Image 1 (tube, rainbow, N blue to C red):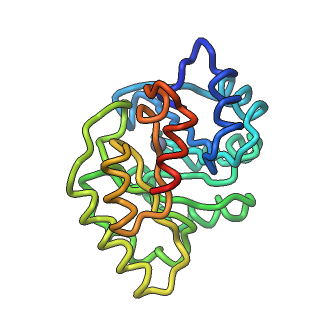
Image 2 (cartoon, rainbow, N blue to C red; image 1 turned 90 degrees about the vertical axis):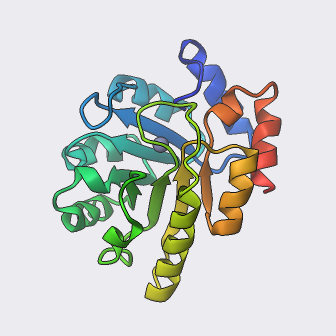
Image 3 (cartoon, helix red, strand yellow; image 1 turned 120 degrees about the vertical axis):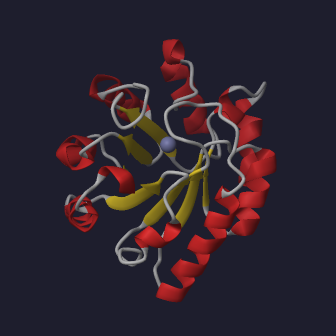
Length: 208
Ligand code: ZN
């Protein structure tokens, strides 16, 4: 949703509801963990009320565990926290699941995949950043493809059921390569909302 038209948010959510997209991905920024601020709970409540698809909430904030009840109240399906924002990651993953949500952990481009080897069987999803988080419309970091392959190997070796999601710089060209490398879920912002026909753009991404 970060790339949506915030002055016509309801129209964009309605478009997503009618689209082939599986989830609606919401990027929450606090101006501390990332150098930008996106939107907070007053906006999120309106989005959640209109959304007819499961919510994938990506918290780019410090101490995300403080907001587990509020994120749950939105009706969130997947709560994504950053590895770099959680000192006690294992505890946070447990608390998210205890609240009845699926637990996702996000890695910045500079964080190696191996940092998750001790929790990989506890998480439902790993979100790899294809750009440094904070802004939409950035250029894809090529090394993300190596990380997808490493993560796929770790998941298979450990018997984890975690999905691999990629966020940042995703378009048809990078998306095709990410799926071939082993990605399960693609987050697309600009590639959808800057397209002449967003529904068609989503359709093309879905058929990769
Ligand atoms: Zn995101």
